[in-house]
Length: 170
Image (cartoon, rainbow, N blue to C red; front, top):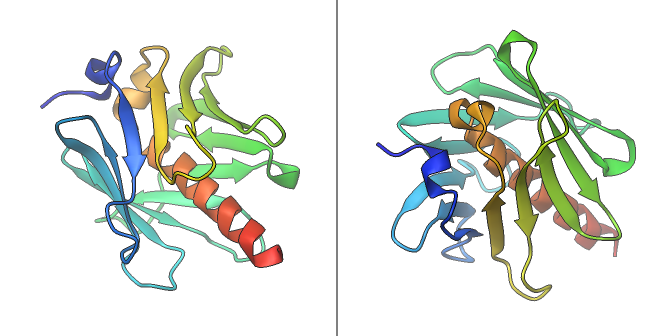
């Protein structure tokens, strides 16, 4: 089985194959690497599958943007996403005290992941405002992303939530 870093020089995209299903895929031109689906239509809980594992994203409180990530077989979360104020991004708290920082620039529309040493790991680029697909650029090989490929889909989860909140307020 390939690892995420082996796709570094390939074009990766997150797409929604059908507008009738809440299913999103991280894919190369040939195959699907990760899928994110919502088991129930109005649920905020998402399930991510890929690389031989299954993870679950849960929102512990409807009042906060923080997330908990757990293996689907376990009940306790092993990682957290702590959102910053005003939706500017946040921090993934991983096992053993490791962290990955998610940066969202509201006016520039940039979405990026950085290591603790401030090295850019992944860039999320929306090719057009009208298209729902998203291009993913793996900028730097990271052992943390190898162990936690679900982080890419959690960032997309945050982007979807932001889009839904913007549509609800307009």
